[in-house]
Each structure stands twice: as C-alpha cells, then as structure tokens.
Image (cartoon, helix red, strand yellow):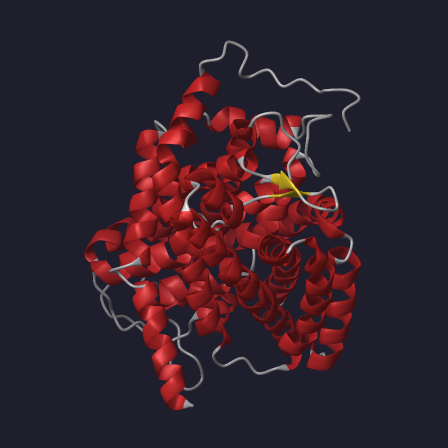
Length: 467
C-alpha cells in the first residue's frame, strides 16, 4: 500500500508540478488576458454591476439567473481550499506564495471568462429541458473533429469521478472533522445530517441548487470575512510589515524561521500558483458548466459575470485568509510534536491568535462547515452534467442518489489518499480544458470584440413572455 501511495504522489507531483500543469495554467491565463485585451480590467465595473446589481436577464433562455449561476460557481470555489488550501500554500511556499495566488487570480479571470463564454455558446437542452454545457460540450462542438470529441469525453470522465473526491468525500470529511474537533459531535451523526441536508437540495436539480446558493453563499462569506476582519483589526499594526513580507518573499524566497524550514523563489511560485488555481478553479473547466445554466441572450454577458467569481474567491476570500496567517505570525508556528503547522490547523491557529477567547476556533470551524456544504452542492451538479454528456439524461438521477450516499462514506472514513487522488483527477480535468481554450481562443476574442463594438452592448433588456 505504501508503494501505491508513493506512486500516486509521484503522479500528482508531476501533473501539478512545475513542468506541466502549473506553467500551462499560468501561461494560458496570461495569453487569454492578452488576446482579450485585458477584459478583466477594463470591463471590471460593468461585470460587477451585471452580476450583483442587475443580476438577471428576465425572459432569456436558461435555467437560473446570472446571479444564481455566479453563486453556484462561488459555492464550489469558496470551499475548504480557502481555509486549508491557503494554509498549505503559505506553509510550504512562505508568505510570498500569497502574492502568486493573487497573480493567478488576476489572469485566471480571463480564463474563467473564456470558459463561461464557451459554456453558454455551445450549451444544449437535455432530455428534461434543462441546459447542459461546459468543456464536455464546447470541446467536441467547438473543435468539431475526432480530437475535440476525445478531449470532451476525457474531461467528462474525469469530471464525473473528480466530483466524488474533491467535491464530495474531501468536503464531507472536512466538515465532519470540524464538528468533531470543535463540539465533539460523532462523525456518523454529522454524516447522516449532512447527507439528508444535501439531498434536500441536490435532488431538486440546478434550480433548487441555484435558489439555495443565491441566499447561502453571501451569508457564509460575510460571516467568515467578518471574523477575518476582526483578526486584521486586532493586528493592524502588523499589517504593513506583513504586506512587505508577502511582496518581498514572492521574489526572494523565505528564510527559515520558527517552524518554517525556508524556501526559494520557485517553491513560493509553485505553491502559490497551484493552490491559487485550484482555489478559484480557473482553468479547471467547471466555470463553464455553471455558466451554461444561466439565463442570457449573449454568452459574453455571462462570461463577464463569471469572471467576477475568480476575483471574489481569490482576491477577496483568499486574501483575508492569507493576511490573517501572516499578520499573526502563525505561519511560523509548530504543533505539540514540534512539527510545522499546515492546512486548516494553520488557519485555525491564526484565528485563535488573532481573536479573543475561543472565537477564532469557532469562526474557522463554522467556515469549514459552511464552505464544505456549499461545495458539495455545486460539485454534484458538475458531476451530473458530465454524466449527461457520457450516458445521457437517464443516469443523472441515479448519479445524484449515489453522490448523496457517498457523502456519508466520506464523513466517517479516514481519508489517507483521497486528497492525492482528488488532485490527480482535477489535474486530468484541467488538461483537456486548457488545450481547448487555447485552440478556441481566436473565436472567443473575435466574438467578444463584436459584442463590445455594438452601440448598445451595455443595455440589458428583459424579454417578457419567453419563460
């Protein structure tokens, strides 16, 4: 078994390492930023107005509103990775890793824009009358040859499997572990309650998920950010020095200090990019799946809305988590055995140090619970859409049922290699998607230019009587 685990870790390190996925993800984001003429910067204000103020195009074709599609994507990305992932990036890459997470977020906005554009453009209506789209459709329809169809099936197969890992068992286990650690609730009780709660939303399909996330995601994010803001206010004197450390260490590496062993520039870059990308999922392809369900008359509009998700996830939530870890000095802390803290325990340590009493641990535990539950809901939808592409609508409902049952298994099972397998599956999802984005980038750029050249491109009209 040890040999199997070692091989899996080697595969993961290669796929997510400095010679394959990390440069491909980062360079694709930079390339798309260039060909789209920095759309994430000069259309930033309009995108947020459309996402958070206008929120919908009434009467347009689709299953859920712009805003609901955005919150479905946010529910998936504002997850355990925003707590544990940030802690891992800083634990292994030093404070400078946070800078590279910001960079991946900024260029990742162009990647997310492109995924959402293609998701809407090539979506189709399934046998139940619901929209279905994402890389498993735009790869086959956009490239439209044997290679494109191969990439589409490749993505769908690994997407359907990955949903059970990073989108289910990892989240369920993290939630149950948080409840057990903070309030001593047995894992099996957490598993049953979580399974029932998730079933109540998941079995209703995308409209049920969209309604729930529209209300739940802002609530959970605000609660967590209030706690993080408290940490920063209690340590406001350390904030300038923390920011200076982040920017300096991003290019020089970090010397050994406390429980931190010291790293160089490339290590900070690697961990920042790796955890940044998999926090906001830009390049993974899932953004195109959520976007395809949106009610819109033009794919560019939903693309603009979708790119705000990457900003909110990485430039807001990830930033608050990272700053709490650096300003409190928790990134140099060690556990009772003398080992350096990493992942969620590192973030918990930062909040405990930064807030009075036991509030720090409670905030992080509640954050894990909320974030993990929301991620479960969105990933169930991503997985079922992949199943629809592979086998048709007939297996969607059975997939939902199995997904719900696996939640209990994830809650009560000691996860040893699931994180490693989940990273591998995510990487294997991203590869065909990134290839497709590069191949289809001229189409995305041309259609985007045509949209923005229209005299009334900012005007969003409700269309009565169509839905």
